[in-house]
Image (cartoon, rainbow, N blue to C red; front, side, top):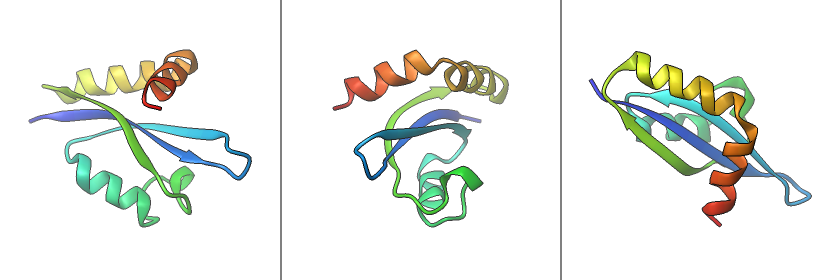
Length: 84
């Protein structure tokens, strides 16, 4: 089965960006859940835009990469700035 690690971004009032990293096997469904308030508790009530995703062949590889991206704020910032 194919899994994806993804990075989504939402804007705050003062034009700051907040980001969320996750993994899933259905990227479109997961993004829709985040935007309808049924995703992770942190993502509720905001409009999210997909800025990055990467495909993996196994769940364990995806989970390892998700963990790395969640902890590496500098890499997340670089990805976000590259997408502008």
